[in-house]
Image: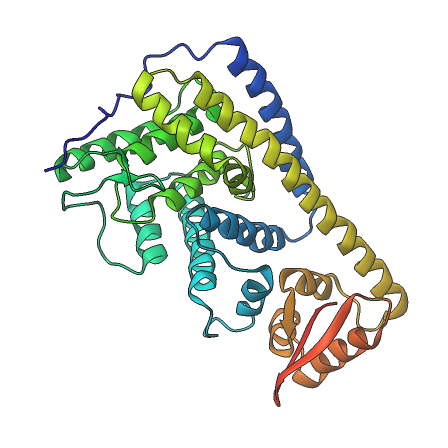
Length: 350
């Protein structure tokens, strides 16, 4: 049996987190995250943000694992859930679904449980098992060298995850952003599942921030920052294991929160600005068909279709068809009509 290279610590770790670099990074991250939470509330339909930003988070988180796809293919996949997506696009779409499942469970219970994480793992990887039972897991770098061996014993994994679940759901005086960084490191180090741990750990980040009410909905775009600094991410994960010093890791995660909060703010502001343009233009030039639900439909579905408009606006097929025909004929709106089959008319952004 492989010998584990790191003893999983009890939580919270025996470390003084009140250092000047941590407190400075914490102040910036807290302020930036509060701006995201505040701006997100001005979008009339929160589902637009969840669908749009969670898909971007899914795409970037999957890229960290070298699963690469395009926005266009992902958005086209939204036209038909049975549509044949490429392997990478399918994995990214399932990531979004797993994140949504975790959020639904959090809304139902107010907790992030191991049962929820296992449900997310099963959806993400299309499996029906759970925590690792078979020894042999070792993490390697790009050169094929083993850099970390997690716990191999199945019972130890169960115990460690039970302790982590308790820590996640127990109140503490330690700031939630610092706790998120600790939780992420602990989950990555336990590496509880046979596959998908990296993506599950990044989903856990945003779910925990939502649980702690630092976000209302899980929309922080953290994987973009991690992907951009992937080498630092893995180096600092390992540094904690080797030295027991948490400062650089905590500062790194807080800086990622600050950076990606700014990216998320720009995305939300772009959505807000464009929704306002569509709303005013349609109300002015197409008053008879205008409704907020129609605007919401256009932004929730980068590729929309007659059936979506029928369902979400509760209108007949001829009415839905007429709405889309009027919009695509308007040259001032950045939308276009595409026909993929004789019976499928789709509107998309130009």
